[in-house]
Length: 105
Image (cartoon, rainbow, N blue to C red; front, side, top):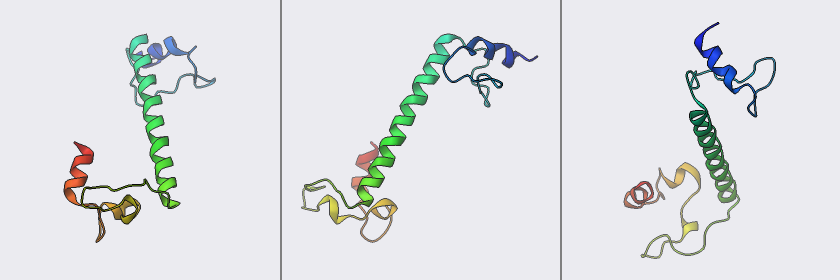
């Protein structure tokens, strides 16, 4: 019995641990972990899942043709004047590069 198996037995009673496997930790991120690290990893996992759900919902909504009202910049370009998906980043009618940089800064 390895060290990882011993460490995982500490979390066998946590939500998500199911017999016969117990707590599934394929990357070994909980090897020698304490309860604080386990709680932090669980919190981060839930947070990332929520961000992914919002991103997916945003993609579905814009693909249906629903866009924000108003202008995306001071020169009068509206949100719906730009295409959906990757075409908004790459292509002829893409958002200007300065605008994309502002999104990620």
